[in-house]
Length: 454
Image 1 (cartoon, one colour):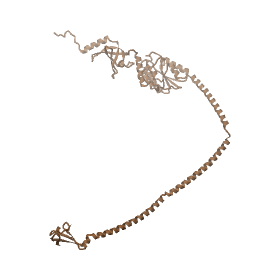
Image 2 (cartoon, helix red, strand yellow):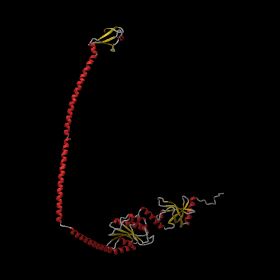
Image 3 (cartoon, one colour):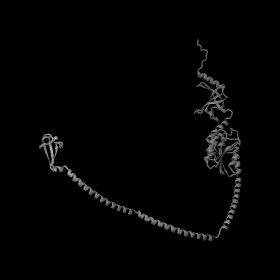
Image 4 (cartoon, one colour):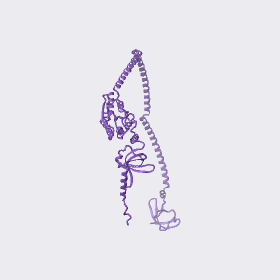
C-alpha cells in the first residue's frame, strides 16, 4: 500500500508561492513602526533595511520609484512609520515588507527633511555671512522670481510704484508650489544671471502651509541662490515662515512687500535727503567762507611794508656773500698748500727717482762683486798651483822618471809588491817612464825574481 497516496506533496517553490499569495492577499496595506537598521543603498537606487523593535525584526525593501519620493534621508537608528504590503522573497524564502511610504517617528517627514538639508548646507558654508553680497543703493532694474497670479507680485508692484515708479521690474513667472516648482525657480534665478543688467533679485511668494512653501526648501533652489552673482532677497510667506532659501539668500525679508521696501528707497525720502544735504552744504560753506575772510583780514593787518623787509634781506644777502667769499678764499688757499705738499711728497716717491737710485746701487754692488770674484779666483789659482806642485811631486810618473818601474801580473794586471807573489813562467807587464815591456818569470825567490822578455 502507498503511504503517500492520500497526501498532497508540494514543491518548495509551490509552497513559497502559496505563502506569498496568502500574505499579499491578507496584508495588502498595513502600517508598521520600528527602528531602522542595516540600511543598504546599492547603485540600483533601491533601499534595503531592517525594521526592528525589542522583540522582533522585519526585512524591508523600498524600490527606486518610492525612494525617489522621500523628502528626507534614511539613517540607521531612525524611528520610522512605514506603509506597505507583505510579500515573500522566494529566492531566500524570507518574508519582507515592500514599503511604499515612510515618515519619521515624532517629527513630520517634511520637517525632518528641512532639518537635514539645513544641517548639510550649513556645514558646506552656504549660510556664512562672508558669502553675503551687499544690496545696491539705487538699483535701476529689479528681477522678480514669483508666480504672476499671486498676491506677492501685486504687493511688490504696489510698493515700487508708491516709492519710486521709474524703477524697472523684470518679472520671471514661475510656479511656486507643486511638482517641478523648485526646478522652475532655480532655472529662473540662473536665467536672470545670464540675462545681465539686473541689479538685485527678489525671490518669493505669499504665505501658505509647509507643504505649500516646500519648493523654497529644495536643495536645487538653495544651490541656485548660492551661485547667483546678483544679490538675492528671499521673501517667502509671512514673517513667521522660515525656509532654506532665507538662510542662503543675501538678505531675508519678512514678506514680499517688505522686500520691495528694502530694495527700493522712497523717491520722496531721497529728495528730502538731497535737499537736507544741500542746505547743510550751503550752511557749512557759508561758515567756512566767513572764517577764511576773518583770517585774511588778520593776516593783512600783520603784513608790513615789503620794501623794508626786502632791504633787510638784501643787506643780509650781501653780508652772507662777503662771508662766503672769504671762506672760499681761505679754503682755496688751504687746498693749494695741501696740493703743493702732496706734489713734493709725490716727487720724493717718484718711481723714476726710485729706479735711478736702484740702478746706482746695482752698479756699485756689481763693481764690488766683480772685485771680490777676481780676488777669489786669484786665490784659487795660487792654491791650485801649490796643490799641483805637491801632486806632481807625489806622482808615480815622477818616480818612474827617476829609473823605477812598476810590475803587474798578467792577465789581471795586479801590481807586484813582493817577490813571493811570483812563480816561474808567470807573465808580467813592466811599466816604464816611457813605454812598457812584457816579460816572463824565469826564476823567483822570496825577495827577487829573474824575468826575461816575453
